[in-house]
Amino acid sequence: MKQRIPTRPAGPHTHPRQFIISWAVALLISPVVIPILFSLYIYRGIIRLLGKNSGLVGYLTPYDCIFAVDSYYTRPYASNLTILELKHRIDVQTIRRLFKSRILDNPSFSKLSCIPVEYAGYWFWKRIQVDLNASVTLFHDSELEHGEADLDECLRRIVEMRYHNELFNVCLLNFGTRSYIVFRIHHTVCDGYSFNKLIDVFVGLQSKYLVKSTNQQFNLLQFITSLLSETIKWGKLIGNLPLHLCTLYKESLTHTPNFYTLRKTSTTGQIRRTVLPLSEIKTVRQITKSHFAAVGMSLMTGALQKLYDEVIPATSALRPERLAIMHSLPKPNHPLTTLCNHWGVGLFKVPFTRDPVDRLIGAEHDFNEYLTLQFDRLLHLHIPIVGLAPCFIVKWFFSINFGTSCGFTSVPGLFDKIAYVGDNTPGIDFGDGGFAEPNQVEVTHMWKVFGLQWRQTAVAVAMYTYRGEASVSMYANKDIVSDSKSMDRLMELFHEEFTELVTHCNKRDEKISTTKLESRDVSPRSLQDHGLINGSSKFLNPCFRNNKLA
Picture 1 (spheres, one colour):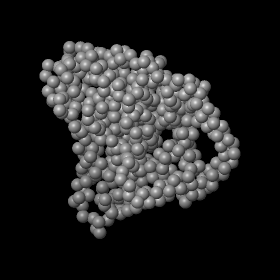
Picture 2 (spheres, helix red, strand yellow):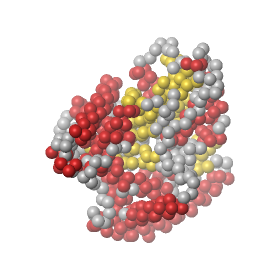
Picture 3 (tube, rainbow, N blue to C red):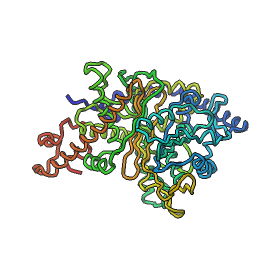
Picture 4 (cartoon, helix red, strand yellow):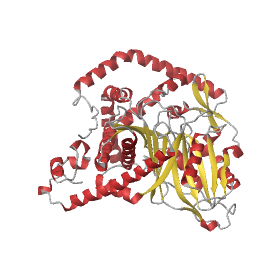
């Protein structure tokens, strides 16, 4: 039997009893909660004034505080990597010179010279002196060519090593005739989009950002339309606020423990990388009308399901029906001129179905439902409230097991080739340092690694686009994938899933194009009768639900 995605209550028209009860509870506790929040707001304001007078340079935003719970100097978890593979070798002095002139001396990245400190119960930024020689280092130097496993092991050691002072590192790895520049930044300092901006400045090119900007020419009609639309959305959000808030925490806190959501005891993991053709991903998206993130999460789920089948008995009580994935979402008006955490988050449930297309459609359904019901805005609305709490409460809150056992991020990157071919050409101007033939220097591949979070993440997947490829990295906790052989197998299964998904999508696309359906009937029943779908309409793409082709 097909596993169905649980429908979240949309409002009083679908769950009237829950709607009434949630509002009754909200009204009952508000006389207690509101004075407490107001008192914390006043207290935090006083502490911020005192902190400013004590020489601290600023306070952490609520989104910064989410990652400030980490142990930077013992065993950090919330670190992210960006890796540049160079065609030629380079020396560490050249990297130091470039990083200092383009990044450290740039006021937009002054946050790299700060570390979080606790003051009177709250987090503040404190200015430090950056030791360039300690933060930009030659991590590996070998005249021998490397195997992929050697590089992956170096990346694992880099992402897991403790910080000494600054919350960033730049590591140079030399293998034979190639070099790798690895940037590591703790998530407290910045999010993936800010990280992209830093890389853009370093290489002299511009990434394709998905965040929307409202800094456009004023149009009265467009303004009024947008205002009405936003008013309606906020009215629905506030009207359903108690119901959706209860639903969100009920889903998170009452989940049935499974193989992935159990507390992790291992403090280390394993990393593997691969690349997928971006053109085929676009084809899959066009056929299924799905988001890029839904494709990635579906592939991730399918690979893990197959690994389950090989290593876990089918009768195991720890086998989940769905995979809970935390996916970072782009947030409008990202201030790309500075390092910050300006992001959203989605908590998605991807079904463990056998058919790759049904699974993708199920993932897309949950993705759309989550955004349509504005659960992303709901999180934005109450994260600042969590930020009112002192450090010890924030640490306790984010130590709770919310059941988001896996992490996923997808960041659009550079389409143009990064290369140095002359002083007037955009790209990394390495000068003549370290290269005999500067005109052959280019970045052949780029990857990102999404760090394991708070000893909860089972598997973290990052997808980054560069030069027509989707670079994929997997970082798995050793409680989940215990040895190198199993990790290699997981990446093989990821590729198998992708091949099957592309093949099935192409076959279904051909059937849709060639099958003569009476009166262009593409209802769920008709599609099932013609063998175009295998599951229930719960997994149908929204473009099929109105009985017409997109």
